[in-house]
Amino acid sequence: MFQRSHLGVAAAAAAVTTIASTAAGPWAADTLLITGGRVLAAEGDRWLEGHAVLIADGRIEKVASLKTIDVHPELLHIDLDGGYLVPGLIDLHTHLMLHPYDEASWAEQVLKESLGLRTARAVAAAKRTLEAGFTTIRELGTEGAGYADVGLRDAVAGGIVPGPTILTATRALVASGAYGPAGFDPRWAIPKGAQVVDGPDAVRRAVREQIAAGADWIKVYADYRRRPGVPATPTFSPAELEAAVDEARSAGLGVSAHATTDEGIRRAVEAGVRTIEHGTDASAETLALMRNRGVTLCPTLAAAEAIARYQGWAPPDPQPERLRRAMAMFQRALAAGVRIACGSDAGVFAHGDNARELELMVAGGMTATEALRSATAVAAEVIGKEENLGRIAPGFTADLVAVSGDPLLDIAALSRPIVVIKHGHVVVDRRAIPAQETRAELLAVCQRVFETLAEGRIDDLKELFLPEAVVTFELRSTDKQISIGVEQFLERARGQYGPDSSFREWISGKPTVLVDGAIAVVWAPFLLKSAGLWATGTDVFGFLKTDGHWRISSLSFTNRPI
Image 1 (cartoon, rainbow, N blue to C red):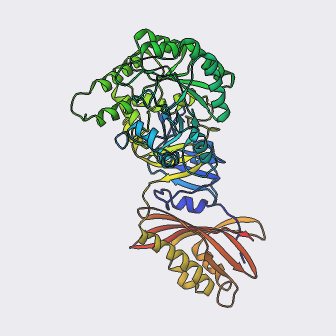
Image 2: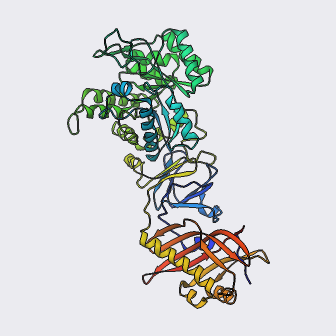
Image 3: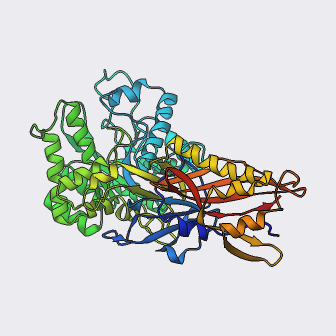
């Protein structure tokens, strides 16, 4: 007599070697195994063939050959079916509180849209950003929405709403008379899209206020237009910029500077900021200064392109001046050896289209490998997370993205993620889902196994198996796990099951069905009653389709008494 208990699924794994689809996500699991894809090496410049990635408790535990990984029933398994696995992407310049300017202008959003509406939009934008494969973002200013980004950051971190890990810059800092909304009668005090400060002491005070309110980064506007229709000029003095950097540094925070003029960029770099946003008119001398001081450029090319489109431009027409200047600056920075990270300015254009920045960087002369690194390892280093993010390696946070094409050859593949994993949780799974008819047919066979066992119709059970099928279970009396042929299993089953026995088994939860052509696996959670005792677990059925019918090629029994 045999009894069922907790088992591995080696027999099922041996019988079914390729699995390409799964039931619809999202789901969460403490342990996850990813196989069947090419894994980006830790250096970020090549693919590891034949490697699996094991995730446990939100971190990458192993990147190794599947042969070295112990597979067990509770292990959630994703087969990428030849796809490409890269680290979760990082965007260092976003504005979740904004939406595309062709829907409403920046000033209309800041002045007319309520804080509640803007925050609700931001929740939806955060979800779209995560689903696009960007698992970490640096949110560079709420544009008049106060500290709403802090609340959203905490809501995401608390699992209340879905979204990427958010680093907040809260209100940002601007000098008097140098930000919008602008152009109104001077008699009226119009709310601004950032915190207005003047003088080193006031700057220090504002930095302290923003940090106390939850800022992870400090953003300053080193230059801006003094009034509508005039060019940008430097605003903050060197002393004011130095005060911001020094105060932020005291708290362990970095400073980002919006800067488009050469003088504004130079002042910010000399003051010690970590990143320059936009950098449009940087001279060769200033770019060399950035390189020598290790200051990173976030070029925001996608925003420049979006604004050009809103103004009527479309390929193949010649690029308008603003976009042409942005692309020329990027090429100068690349040639000068400036470190460049992905910073898209999403919010100017649609959230979820962040990968467009990488496509434009490649169009500007960067290799696809460098562009991918700019949104992974380089970006992680900028935010001080190089030991946790940006690579697929043991100990790193399990933020991962799978795509169907090779992004080292075609960076546009990153715009079409098929799987997104954040902190070990599958949040997007766009792989092929088995047709409902196939799923129903497979589950019907599983249910028939339970029913025929309970009714003692062993001969009828035989027709559900392939002749060479293998069944795995454990002899509890000897504590040994064994695998036997189906004929031997059926012989053992005779006399143990039937209408007079107390054995009953039901599928008790949502099964996972994986199908690849004529091969399939079903993980079926069950509830079992036998001899007055109850048990639960997962039965693992391996299937092969022959002569138009699904038949069982392997079956592994598990159970946990309850």
